[in-house]
Length: 91
Image (tube, rainbow, N blue to C red; front, top):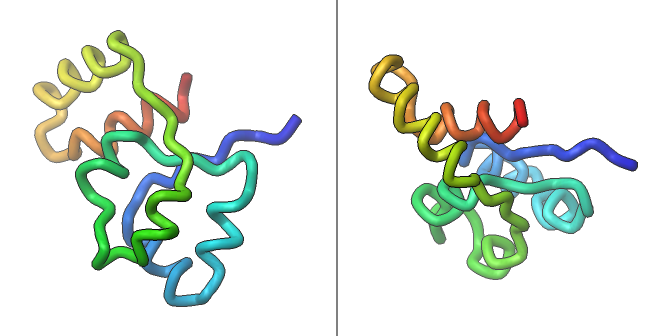
């Protein structure tokens, strides 16, 4: 069994795309990104739409979203996207 890799930053997508290896990364069976990050932060400026549509997502549960909301209030300097990525990776 392989470990799950969660893409946590759109800059990584841009870097992989610039290097010409994003499609190979997206095709790996164990790579995911948060549905929130894909929906809100990834766009045609990040990479081409074909690759965006191929990206697999990991969905946050209601409890994880609640925890993210609570932590966002406490940790004002950390984005909600960074917090949800931490929670998804932890769980």
